[in-house]
Length: 199
Image 1: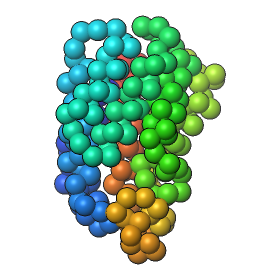
Image 2: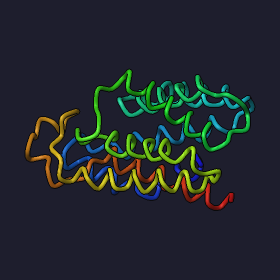
Image 3: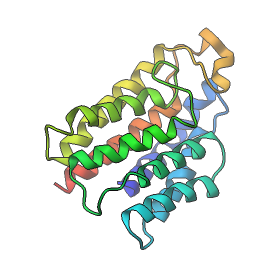
């Protein structure tokens, strides 16, 4: 999943930086690409699921800089702290993502409606939570997350930014998609496509 997500971000690097340039520093694509490269590399190391998730989180934060890496790193570390077993069912998988979000939210006050990555991430994980008791299919679980993330990302076009440099634009930030939300949707789409391929 992480390898697929890295590939998706690589393909859309220019688009993500262009989106960010409209309201921010213009470097979100570069930042999320560095974070996903660190995550993909760390995922290939030997270790238990908990150890791997911890390494992913710390490598993201130590090998890259900025708020993107700090938040994404805290997400994976939160996931690591909730690992119940090496082989997970849908309910347990959703539980890891829920724990990741909880830990990430200790570092960020942003929420849905603030024109950030949370506009895609929170709906994605809420969709997983809503479905976790009803399915045994990881493909279905991640498909629901991907759909919700995409809708959330699309919604940011009509929002005014409340965080980051974009908030300085106030109402002028409306009419632009949030780069962080778009990259989050790309990542969850890659997760969903991978889960579908693996059955």
